Image (cartoon, rainbow, N blue to C red; front, side, top):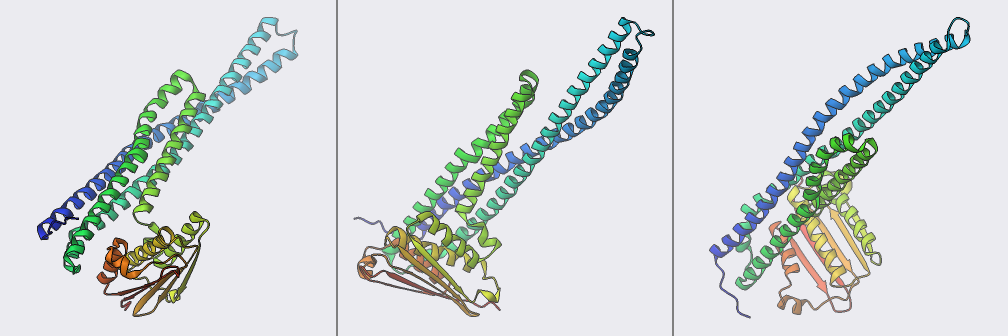
Length: 384
């Protein structure tokens, strides 16, 4: 196989294309947030009008209630005294009482419809607010990625000793990054973006449906619209979690690893995953770059055990001390020949090695064919 000589200019060009792709994804997510904000503002205005209408209907209903009560009293009076009141007067009293009662019933139904619409709008606003906040958070996370790519990632070329390995690793990074951005862009376009566009369009039709087809059809459309908003919110949350687990920022490394291992175990079904943490009771959070790197290292090791080693049992142990953190991942999979694997340039192992070296740590891998694999990672740090 022919390999072209790679230099710093080519590496810069690769990184520039990566940054352009990620920046484009950031713009797409920002646009979703802006569309959600516009929808939110429109629903706020509609909610104000609905609340005013509810107040007006209540006032009109109270007046009709008084008139209907007087009409019923009048009907009772003329019905009991046939000598004083003729048949015409009795019929007139009955017609008025009946008419007012019908109007009162319709007014009460109108009040119920407006209250239901008000409640639906308030729930929709909560959902849209969540979408807006999540999209803003995701834009912030992508900004962190861009900063990393513009600064730390440009040092990758100086950290890989072998020139051939440098080229292979760099090309695989750009390939994986571009594929990931295409996937995220495609998922956002086909999922939340389409759903929100549909919400915008259908929200404009609701008033006309109420007017032309009646309340029942209108409420069907509102319920469908609510489901669309809920589905869009679910899709945005799923995409955010795929990019970076929110629990990592909120809870820290250990709870996120525990949740991740439980999820993987449930998903795979036949594989048993044991997770053990020692020293977490000290309560101090690790620096963000340590938590992200260690989570990705554990994720890569467990994925290799399940996907390549076909392991049925995996044990992950994390030991946290004041000056370092040690993580071991052991599986009972089919194992591999380390020398042959090194000759084949396993990019998963190269990537793990690079992550550990960026943290000034050490990684040791012990594996034999048929005897499983042990990955030992040690990273120094100072919580003080």
